[in-house]
Length: 506
Image (cartoon, rainbow, N blue to C red; front, side):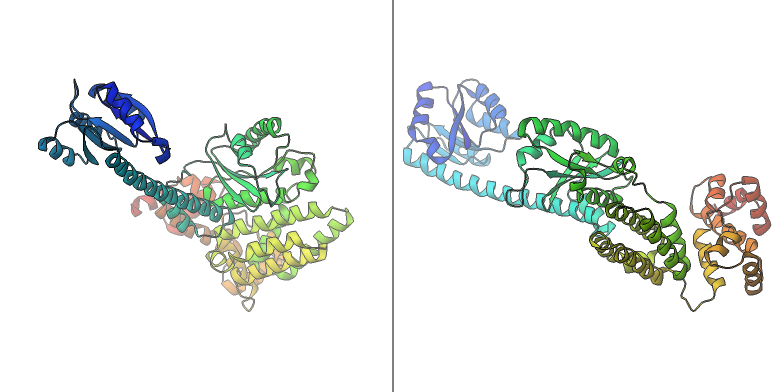
């Protein structure tokens, strides 16, 4: 309902206008009355009505002065002037101030009603337009959040949309949480009252409904803090509604661009609500408590085989994993958690490390993740894992027709910052280290360590030129843990010290 205010120094006039038409029939209510100009101005700014009926001549401040001061203060409502004087100067001033109408006393009911109806139509049209744009922007924001969680838009496009809609992502910690209403169904959806109560005390949270789930993007808090707050809120929900939410919290990430990893983690947990039926909230620590820990060595081993293109060794590693799962009677759900974590790790590393992967394989990751979740047997699951790795290897590794030495060089170029040894690389390639060392020197003309040093010093020079990193930081990044050893190697290959080199490049 819209608000109307009547300002006149005569009470009988104010009462007459209130009764002249049935204001409620035209969606108006009288919110206040002003008994003179100063009192009227104060109440206009306090109540901010949609329409003000104001007398021209009043003690202390005229109606024209009141309108002028209200406009200066930012008031945007409409005015209708009431006066007993047909004065051209008053009319001229009123027009200059954008007054809607100039009505002579005694007020004609039909004339007032005609103006009220016209104003009502304008206010309704504006409200519908405002509602349309508000709803459109809300839908657009929801779409941005969905793209962010599902990783379906490139980062530059997301940055532009986040800036366009003024969305706040200037935090150093993010995590996604998925809430399932234990009482809701596809027909009735999630209760808005439950959502409002759940989020009442939580700050810096964006929400989006995806399928039948409420997804939260929590900013500025670790997943442990988010989980704690959600559990407290869930207690309030249960007291009021009997049943609360089932909560799955993804791991923390430092950058908003990585939120889809946290969402994938929360989504995986939420899909196993049956296994956690008696629990209110699950997170990474739940997996660890149940003995389901992330197997770090296995995905790193697969990554090495993928990068050097040794799919025979990769197949053997997967075969050994299959025998381990069967021999230890690992449950289906535990296996799927580990393998999903494995491909998530591979995807995360390769996306950052290889342009070719981002360009050619970004859409395939989710397909394989879904296949693995739906796999009906261990063999099918691990076969999907092998195919996932094989497809990646075809995209990023040195082509199979090139010899093993060139594949070694490619591997060294990508991993020079690690503690590389000929023995460890020989093991990856299934070669005897002494034999591999001989054929490496014969093919390249230099031994393994000299080539590795050359690669490291080349990248050290690049970092000295392109970054503001300290020398000791660059030494560590290119694989030298001993700063003195780095200095001696740099001087041997470049002829001057790292600091001297940096100065010459400035």
